[in-house]
Length: 350
Ligand code: PHE
Image (cartoon, rainbow, N blue to C red; front, side, top):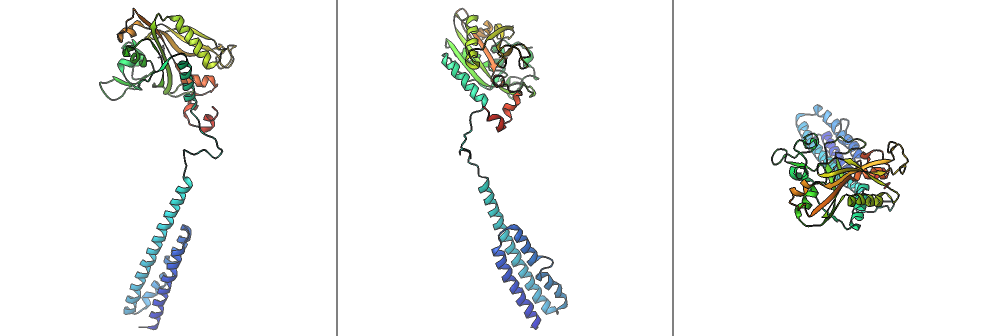
């Protein structure tokens, strides 16, 4: 064998051993990239030797050529292995760094807390539990019967249109929907046939409204229903006053204005004195001194009869109002959408 072939083969062995230890020792991906270019790149010793191949004799060319291929494969394999190891280590490190223990107290030792709407809901529940009410559970998916028909809502009532309610693509067309108010729970309670009824039902309701500073398509209401012997308008009046004072403070006054709901007769809208100006008149209440909060009335006889309640014996009242609306009023929050944006800077204030 020619002397210079021996030298070339020895050089190649030398490259393999140097490169192998370099690839084994590599610490990060950028270092690996430099090694790859050093040992496998266009200007590497391997490439130089390849260029010199053409000058060799046929036999020598074959020997060196084959050896070159083997060496290149070995080195490429080394580089691949190093890359896999480094990438795995990088991922493991990232996972380690990104770990977030959601059960852990945060770094300042501050715990998270219930959402403002949940806090107010619980406060309302406490107030009515204190008055001897039970807390009823309703369904968010209701049939037309519970949401409308049994509540004396006419077939041509605007709320029944596709524009106002979210209908589900199930059952007979237009028969199943997301409840548009918590009032369907009245029907469930009446159907149960156990009297007297003193119940509230807080929960989520859905309407096809575009979110704006005062509206959300998904919001919360609380429904109240009382059915007993001898219940009259004065009982409703007193309950509204007492419960609103419990929430907004004893200086709060309430007033009822004539209103209309198909499921109550007579019906009223109820207002509270403005929480900001206490009734003096300011920007929040539009100079009125009063803020509209909810609806109420005596349960319509048609509603009682639809659920086979003995109307000679029982009568009742119902009321309903928005919990989110109450939250923004009590805290003078200018835009109801803040409640659902999950901005910790906003939420942590309450
Ligand atoms: N369900 C009515 C609404 O969503 C509120 C209401 C409840 C009115 C009970 C009267 C009695 O606007």
